[in-house]
Structures are given as C-alpha cells and as structure tokens.
Image (cartoon, rainbow, N blue to C red; front, side, top):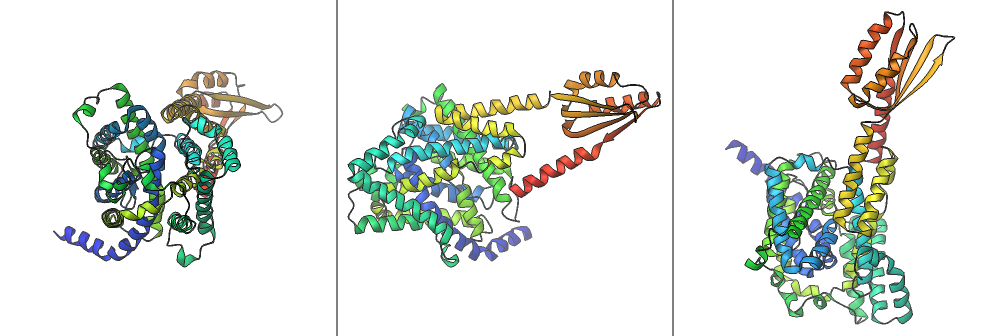
Length: 520
C-alpha cells in the first residue's frame, strides 16, 4: 500500500512538467500523423487514430516511460507496399497479426534479441526508407502521385520537376507551398528565438503554408481531396475498417503472413532502437524491453482491429518529450488525449491544410533519414560496416524494404563468419638480439587454432618471442590455453614469451572512446 502511495505521489509531483511536455509532443505529432498517412497511401485521418492509440494505450503499458509511440516514417514504405499488393481492407488484418506476433515475442522474452540486429543494417534500413520517402513524396509535393516503385520515383524526379517548371499552373503552386514548408522548417530549426522554439518547426511550417494558400486562394489539393467522401473530414472515425470474415479468411495466406512478420520485425527493431536512444537522453528509469514489446504489440493489435496504420516508438516525438521536460509516462498518455480532443472538436480545420505542405514535411523528413551522417561512426568499426550500410540502402531502393533488410542481415552474418574465422600471422625476426616478433591480425579463435599452433612450432628454440595484439580483434580461451602451454614448452628450450596485452587493451579503449565521442 505504501509503495502504491509513493508511486502516486511521484506521478502527482511531476504532473505539471508532464502536462507541458505533452502539449509540445502533441504539436509535433499532429502534422506528422497526417503526413505519414499520406505517404503510406491511407486516408490522412488514419494516422491521427494511430497516434491516439500510441499515446493512450501504449503510453499506459509502455516499458520505456519517456518513449512516445505513433505512426512512423520507418513503416511508410512497407505499409504503402501492403496497400498496393493486398488492398486497404487487408491492412488491418496484417497489422493485427503483426501486433500479436510482437506480444508473443515480448512474452517469450525476445525483446533483447531485436537489439542484436547490426546497427549498419538498422541505419541502412532507415536511410533506404528516407530515400524512398523523399522520392515518392516529391511527386506528391507537385500535387501528383508516386510513379510506382522506389527506383521509378527516384529516376522520375528530374522529369517531373522540369515538366512542372515548364507548364506552371497548379503543380507549380503546389511546389511553391512544399518548398515554403521545407524552408520554414529549416530556418525555424536553426534561427528561431529560444523562447519560441517550444513551437515545433513542422507545426509552424504547416500553419504558414495554410495561411499562404488561403491568402493567395491557391487552387491546389487539400486534405479532403484525398478522401473518397470529402465530408468525412468532419468525422475522422469514418476511416475505421474492422476486419471482416472475408479478410480474416486470408490470415494463413503466405503473402499475408510474410507482410505481418515484416511489420512486426521492422516495427520492433525501430522501437527498441528508439528506446535505447531515449535511455541515453535522460537519467530516469531504464527501458524494460520485453514489456515495451508487449505494449507495442497491444497497440498494433488495436490499430489492426481499427484498420489504421501500425505504430512504433518514434524518436522525433520521444526526443521532443525529453527536451520539453517530460518525467513520466503521463506525458505520452496526455499527448494521445490531446490528439483525441482535437479529433473530436476541431477536425474541420484539417480541410485547410494543403497536401503539398504535408508532402514537403515528409520530403524534409526523408532527406534527414537518408543523409549518411552515420557513416563516420560506422567506420570506427571497419569499412565493412559502411559496405553493409550502403548495400542495404541500394537493395531497398532497387527492390523493396524486406529484401533490403534481409540482404543487410545476410551480409552481417557473412561478416561475422569471416571475422571469427580470419587470422593473419606475420613474422619479424631479429637474429642479432635473438628476438622474434609475432603479429596477429583478425580473430584468434578455435577455428584458426591449428594455424596458430603450426606457426608456433616453427619458432626457433631459445628465442625471445613477443606476440603483438594491436591488429587483433578477438582471442578466445582455446588460443590463450595454447599460448600458455606452448610458453611452458618454449621456456624449457631457454626461450621466453611476452604477450603485449596493453596493445589489445589500448585498441579497445581507443575504439570505445571514439564511439562515445561520435554518439554510437
């Protein structure tokens, strides 16, 4: 009873800070929820419902108290592909299945395993998604539609732009609104007065775009133009599509199961990566990964039942929550409440938002995701990490998201096999001083133990042997045991063995220091 009382007091003491933070997160989430819906090929208001579920349901159950969940840019491409291949009515069934898979994974304590995915693959996935979002939403920013697959959208950008500049008219007006949105976001982020930065740049950009379009009476597309029935803008719940017996009958279809597993895997990896990043931003309670996975699964199960977008933990909203002073899960829950109030009271305001402004917001988001700022950090761990990163991007853009992620994982496994099976041994013998330098490069493991043993057998009796580790990545117990036994035999011939452990320790220290400075 005393523990319950102290917990209540803790939440009560922090309620003021959480309430203020929740307003900031709500303002950040509002335009992003709708923009991500458009990029995903679903009605704009579907993202608001997902945001409400992410705030209220996942926020209440979350294992990461300060992480905020909602529709995420990382799933837009996959959802768009699902809608194109399976149809909008099947989206809910697939998201429901994905949610149940996440719940099961959390109950089986698999949360930590999702963190084992190579950072090069995760960042490559996000960058590939960024390229796809950038290229598809560029066409939407011209009041058009994506041409097709990712590579088609990318290669079609110059032609679409030149056609727009040559013909003018509505597409040129839409482009101007999109560019204005991007410019405001960039300028507000860099130059806004500190006191005004509590207003999120995306919201400011959308408001300025709305005012400009209204003042100039621009005849461009607005959010109601994306709905089958424009009147539905006043009732966001009209987009809800409950699973039908017909759609549930396809639940064991191989394509549906693969799509659900893809959503579950990518949503879980992105969520837990985000949770790990949020833990580094504050000094409060750490993430309980299995609990967070169950919470995400429950949220996605509900989103699936409602037929709306899947959700994940989102770094933009989560970092805004921490920066605004959020202390407990209350801030995430309240942000969902504010989205619910907005949906109930002010849905008519959505009719004034130009589609091009939301597309511009996503073009900017895609650019930030795609920009290869992570490469210097990955290079701290070797050039192969950068190769995996760029290879993942190329395959995602040229084929699809799932193939790209699987290809990245395959490269990671091959790299791991190579690292733990590759060992180079180099000699440097000084006959005058009776000294032999033995340089090891790679990994000294059980797999390469015969090679190491063969090299040691060639050492001259009585030599002063120094083994250098500056280029060694790993040495296992079997090889250490070999060196210990060989040392005893070699001392019997009048020789000695010196192992330069400091070089291995120094190398680890330098790599760790570099990684911490880079923020890995």
